[in-house]
Length: 328
Ligand code: ADP
Ligand code: F6P
Image 1: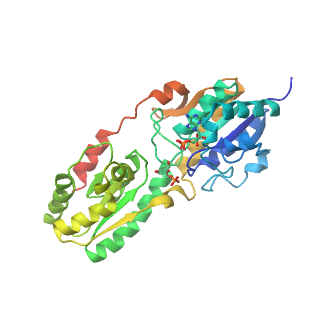
Image 2: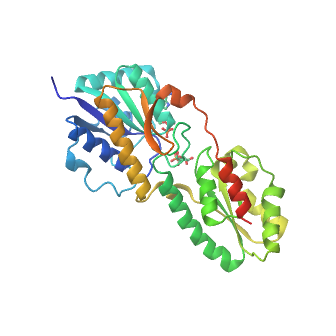
Image 3: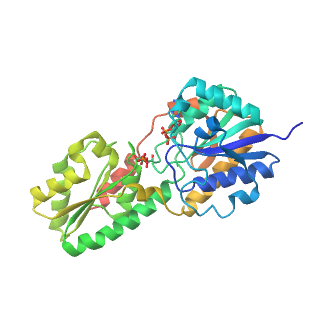
């Protein structure tokens, strides 16, 4: 029997820890007796034949690096059925029987399509947003939050020196998890997320006034980018202008942006990425495809891709209540 071959690719937005997942897939695959190919620039690599056979040393010294050594891409072409068939034919021509796709839920839709075209695929959740309903955790989330709190601690130094209000927008697409946990960790006076309706007067202005009464003179407001996307007038800049006019205190807006996507992954991201990469290879080794590796109740397990994609995200309202109670 010929040696089993698998491939690994990263797709969608990069996230710190993707390299650790690639390393785990390559090393697990080789150590389980398989040939492993690294595919460059997401699904595009399968359409252009842009891949390379990896060895144990190809993934040396990458576990601590941000970004992805395989590069990543958003491939519009791959959404077409003909492209998916072409990629599946290419995999067959290379003897590749399985592909590990590290990315977000868009990438998982691609993985399902490629499985339907005949190549077993396994998804591994890699995105800073933590917005994948089927998994309690996505690789990159912890690092992004640690970067955000480091940046906000710096912003606090200057806000404090000037008795100012700083409004900080964090990433997360439509998900408020980065904002919620980061907001708690920096002691934000208010945290605005797209999952919870709010009233600016009650949930921002009144909270600032209440803390002013206790002697506080500088304020951090954390806003999820999804809030500004939903209502432009609630973007960080608009909020800063509103607070200045309404309360007569100086306010400044900072959009943290892509700084949150880079940097060396934290222990948590390195370890979870390693566990998830290993689990993905174990499934492919057993000829199992169309699954997503997930974290549920703190354990690494797997789910059917369609079942996973149909799940609805549940925002952690208990944690939100904690934040609202202790931040004044
Ligand atoms: P993420 O994986 O971070 O959610 P995207 O939504 O941009 O990022 O998806 C990444 C890539 O996955 C897309 O550029 C495309 O190549 C592929 N993809 C997304 N949706 C589909 C789909 N419905 N069918 C096939 N491929 C898809
Ligand atoms: O999904 C990760 C993410 O960084 C989101 O938080 C953000 O909305 C988006 O990607 C930004 O995408 P781009 O890198 O294309 O600007």
